Image (cartoon, rainbow, N blue to C red; front, side, top):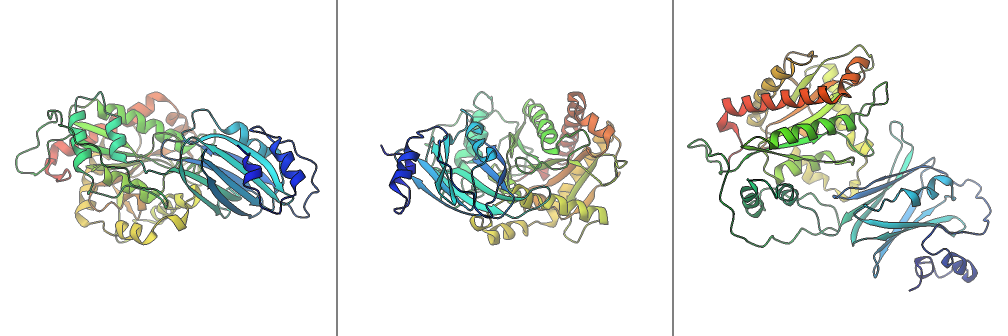
Length: 453
């Protein structure tokens, strides 16, 4: 089989050069010296974010560049040509960054395809629906070329929930939910993906979920809570003085909280991300709706320009503006996650997303304030409160139309003392325990507020 550097090369590529490229095989190509371009850009950093949902590869550059891509079959490959860049140690480092457990990438090869074009060839483990786009500088990032490798068949959050519960005594109930919930909400996907085929119908296991109170119309199923660890991947969130990233702390807290929720006889939790990768804000909402969550909890760690700011806070959605200047600043910071984390605007139907986010109801907000008040009261027992009441702002991630949704700022990671606390497993466990207590109090006092069938 001809190497992709030969078979995919443009027709006008000189034959001797093509033969030299072939000699590189699957390792980093040894290339002849090529004169430097007058204004060739430099790739300053390369990052990879493998996950079951998709793998992201990011190349950060000092200048905006153009890139073209195409895919090849037998075997599956993704070819990316970057115009106006020269080989460097940073881009060569991409070869070693691909790990054996990456779900989508087997290996990568790098070479100078033409005098002004660097070619990346990704040898793939499966067919993908690639999204290749560029991002302008924002925050500490320069120009970025982003390669998102999604599976051809979109992953279904309901199936992920079911897979995570195979040994759960409520597995039969969750399977019933997965089989009967196909029309509840769309599966998050991107251009080029297909929806997964229907699961084969099987006789459901006996229902072991706690019976619902009479007359509230709920199915006999556990209370499902969507836990949303903020930020992730390219978006680190706030960073403390000791270099602690918000995205890491909130994921650890969410994982602890999930274990505690799953240990309850009538509750189960679903994570919108279970490792370090980026999830767009509207996809977080879609995932929660897809699993028919009864409650959505987004977990964050606050930051402020002055390190003296401290304390925990709980937020609900506001339809009529933020409750303070600081609230507007915080909402804008959190809503900018899509810009920092990076999304391909061309592959997301922004009109559909906006319709979804504009459907939030007064009832949802009222329920959010009720559960948020319960959780705030419990957190106040283990940490100082920044405000002793629920605050309101226009957080995009709280705009599910039919799920009570709150955002918890666990502490100020910009405060050295609170950053130190957030780093300790003991304090993370205290936060998770306080949140669970507030959730249990909410459903005990308001059983009819859980999402109706």
